[in-house]
Image (cartoon, rainbow, N blue to C red):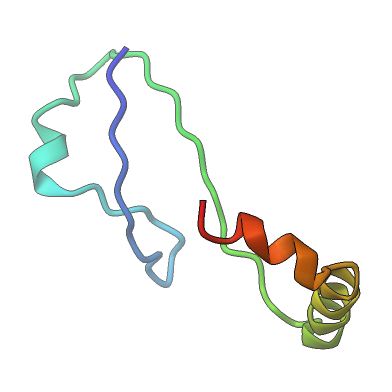
Length: 69
Protein backbone atom coordinates (compact mmCIF):
# COMPACT_ATOMS: atom_id res chain seq x y z
CA UNK A 1 0.00 0.00 0.00
CA UNK A 2 1.30 3.47 -0.88
CA UNK A 3 0.89 6.37 1.53
CA UNK A 4 0.55 10.04 0.63
CA UNK A 5 0.29 12.98 2.97
CA UNK A 6 -0.99 16.43 2.09
CA UNK A 7 -2.70 19.38 3.71
CA UNK A 8 -5.83 20.98 2.35
CA UNK A 9 -8.55 23.39 3.42
CA UNK A 10 -12.22 22.46 3.56
CA UNK A 11 -14.60 24.38 1.34
CA UNK A 12 -17.99 25.68 2.49
CA UNK A 13 -19.52 22.27 1.66
CA UNK A 14 -16.99 20.13 3.57
CA UNK A 15 -15.20 18.82 0.49
CA UNK A 16 -11.58 17.72 0.53
CA UNK A 17 -9.48 18.89 -2.39
CA UNK A 18 -6.94 16.33 -3.54
CA UNK A 19 -3.76 17.72 -5.11
CA UNK A 20 -3.56 17.23 -8.89
CA UNK A 21 -0.39 15.12 -8.66
CA UNK A 22 -2.24 12.57 -6.50
CA UNK A 23 -5.29 12.37 -8.75
CA UNK A 24 -3.24 10.31 -11.21
CA UNK A 25 -2.82 7.67 -8.48
CA UNK A 26 -6.60 7.31 -8.01
CA UNK A 27 -8.48 4.80 -10.12
CA UNK A 28 -12.19 3.99 -10.04
CA UNK A 29 -12.88 0.95 -7.92
CA UNK A 30 -9.62 1.23 -6.01
CA UNK A 31 -9.73 0.47 -2.32
CA UNK A 32 -8.39 3.39 -0.26
CA UNK A 33 -8.13 4.23 3.42
CA UNK A 34 -8.61 7.81 4.55
CA UNK A 35 -7.30 9.07 7.89
CA UNK A 36 -8.55 12.50 8.90
CA UNK A 37 -6.63 14.47 11.52
CA UNK A 38 -8.16 17.71 12.75
CA UNK A 39 -6.21 20.39 14.57
CA UNK A 40 -7.53 20.72 18.10
CA UNK A 41 -8.74 24.17 19.10
CA UNK A 42 -6.75 25.88 21.81
CA UNK A 43 -9.83 27.12 23.63
CA UNK A 44 -8.48 26.27 27.04
CA UNK A 45 -5.21 28.20 27.04
CA UNK A 46 -5.28 28.50 30.84
CA UNK A 47 -5.26 24.71 31.20
CA UNK A 48 -2.37 24.40 28.74
CA UNK A 49 -0.38 27.06 30.61
CA UNK A 50 -1.08 25.43 34.00
CA UNK A 51 -0.01 22.03 32.68
CA UNK A 52 3.30 23.44 31.42
CA UNK A 53 3.90 25.27 34.71
CA UNK A 54 3.28 22.12 36.73
CA UNK A 55 5.54 20.09 34.47
CA UNK A 56 8.46 22.49 34.78
CA UNK A 57 8.13 22.74 38.55
CA UNK A 58 9.52 19.22 38.65
CA UNK A 59 12.54 20.27 36.57
CA UNK A 60 15.77 20.60 38.51
CA UNK A 61 18.92 22.48 37.48
CA UNK A 62 20.72 19.15 37.90
CA UNK A 63 18.64 17.86 34.97
CA UNK A 64 20.21 20.43 32.63
CA UNK A 65 23.08 18.04 31.92
CA UNK A 66 20.63 16.12 29.68
CA UNK A 67 19.66 19.18 27.61
CA UNK A 68 22.62 19.01 25.24
CA UNK A 69 22.90 15.30 24.52
